[in-house]
Structures are given as structure tokens and as C-alpha cells.
Amino acid sequence: MIIILLGPPGAGKGTQATRIMSKNGLVQLSTGDMLRAAVAAETEVGKKAKEFMEAGKLVTDEIVIGIIADRIEEEDCKDGFLLDGFPRTVAQAEALDQLLKDKDLKVDAVVEMKVEDESLVDRITGRYTCANCNQGYHDTNLKPQKADVCDSCGSTNFNRRSDDNRETVVSRLATYHAQTAPLLPFYSAQGVLRTIDGMADIDDVTVQINDVLDKL
Ligand code: AMP
Image (cartoon, rainbow, N blue to C red; front, side, top):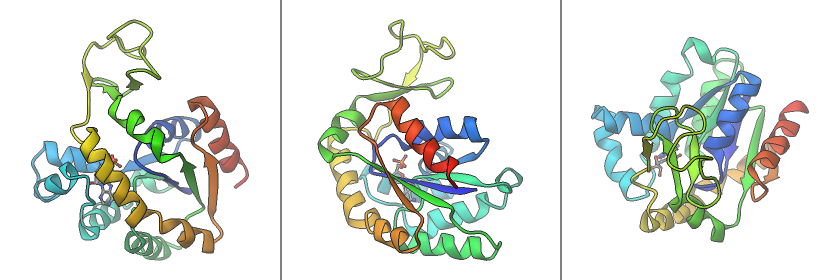
């Protein structure tokens, strides 16, 4: 099964991808996570990507398509995968279709997580994750049960993404509308687009996504 989670930054793609992954045994492929790892490791890709990411702009199609093309060749992707943050342009979507066609595969569903712009800035600027297990939290919406202690692993170290600041978020939203939203008609024309209400609470969004997947 090949699933794409599509939605603006802060829609909850990463959170839902982790949940779907554990329920359905699909591998989560997040280009954002892969690029952040490349930046941290100061690889050639990381050096090229850093400036774009800090400005809230997209990294070039060539770089991300290359990353995904290599990643889907790996053994753990052979039974399917869940894409989170890729594709983000029509050129990336076309390249993905071609990569899959070469393997006699195709995208099974694109789940659009629809969220109003007004709520995204607060969602993003308030979010943080456990530095140890990556569990997600939020300053107001989703605090750990015990202050400053991760519910899942007990760690007291947390990370905030450097691009989760107000200025970069505004740029990331504009980028989404200009370059990524055109994927909606692209996938609608393929008959694979399913839209869910991403404004609902986290558990409800998971139920809606699982409903889509159960019908495939
Ligand atoms: P994300 O974690 O998905 O919000 O991605 C963080 C940043 O990584 C984005 O703002 C982009 O700069 C870059 N990025 C992630 N995925 C892609 C992609 N598919 N195409 C271009 N840039 C990407």
C-alpha cells in the first residue's frame, strides 16, 4: 500500500504518520526528517538544503526526488510506505508516479488533511518533541502529564525545530499554497484523493484516516 499524507505545515502529518505506521506496519518516509538528519550530519545534501529550510522555502526537486528514489529501493519499503511531506510539487508527484510505474506500483490514496490557515501558526510555534523518543507535544494543546517529563519514555530533554518560528511559518504556508496545493487537483484527477477534517482532535483524525485506509 502506498499512501501520501498531504496538508499544510502543522496539519499533523508527522503525528498521524507515526500512529498509522504502528497500526498498519507501513514505513513512514518523511523528507523533512531525512533532510534535517542530512543537515545535522553536514552531508553534501544537508549543506545544499539548509538555507532553503531556514527560509521556509522548498529544497530543489532534484534533491528530494533523489532522496526518495534511493529510499524506496530499501528492503523495508517493499510492502508499501507512507509518505509524509513528499511530494510537495507537481514535478515531484510526476517523478514519483514514474518511479512507481517502473516497479509496477501506483499511489493507492492521498489523504488531504484540511486545516484552516489561522490555526496553523499557533499549532506550529507551540510544538516540540521529546529529544529521546520523538513523541510530539504542544505548549497549550498537548502538554506532558507531568511537566517537562516525556509521557512515553520519561526523558526530560525536548527539541524545538529551528524553522518553527513565526516568520518562517508564514513563508512555509505561502509556499504550501503556491507550490503544494496544486497537487490536490493533480491527485483528484487520478481518483485517489480523500479529504479529511484535520481540525478535529488528534484521535478523531486518526479514526478518519484509518477509515480511508480500511476501505482500500
Ligand atoms: P517538514 O518537516 O515536512 O515540514 O519539512 C521541513 C522543510 O524541509 C520544508 O520547509 C522544506 O524546506 C524541506 N522539505 C521537506 N520535504 C520537502 C519536499 N518534498 N520538497 C522540498 N522541500 C522539502
